[in-house]
Image 1 (cartoon, rainbow, N blue to C red):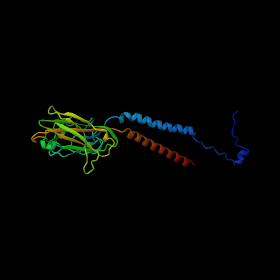
Image 2 (cartoon, rainbow, N blue to C red):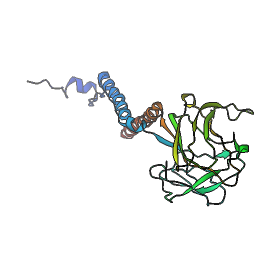
Image 3 (cartoon, rainbow, N blue to C red):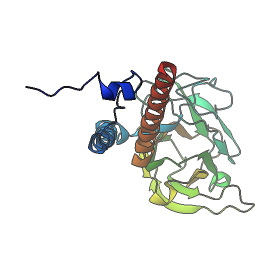
Image 4 (cartoon, helix red, strand yellow):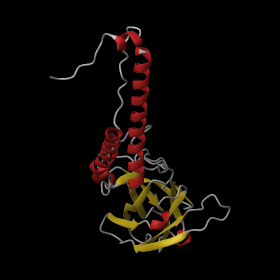
Length: 275
């Protein structure tokens, strides 16, 4: 016969007719197990999002479409969000600057456009460069924040006709705010003459990874034209990169931590009201 708690007699009289209920406590082992489940959930979410985190993201994208052929080129990067709302735009705002004497907006190309680029004009608008010997050594450049990115690459479509530029060099600076910023040369590539647009791609070195203030510069040489036309054309400049895994994991931990904190506050609130 199962034992029962006596609710009458000496014990009940001693308690003045009130039998207190024992408080329930989660066993230490149970609480430890629940904590392990939370940690396991974090790792599962991180693993689930890893393929997306390893994909190349468009950081900065210049498609030059917000310009009129014959006028000045469009120096603003196209964005996923405001003000462009271009699904194929980049996630960072930036401005293309140059010390070239003569530039302009010319007919462009669809080559090297991003997936989802909503500016679907064909051939679109590009940036034309004057290429006289006096223009050799001049550059175009833009800034970025690479704090949360690595494995970056820079690509663009280029077409050089006649006696246009025949070489381009990539360099970078991580001290652009300095009165005399230094630029580190990454490498150079030939620009083929004639035959239409080609894609040139540079791998951005690891030294740029994690830097908050970076400038990438493209320097052009080899021009021998008389300056009557904009002989070299640049279009659809893309800078892509991979988000750092710590950024993804940190975001997940932050969200889970907030949810856990809110859960505990809700439980305390319910217990207080019941009391």
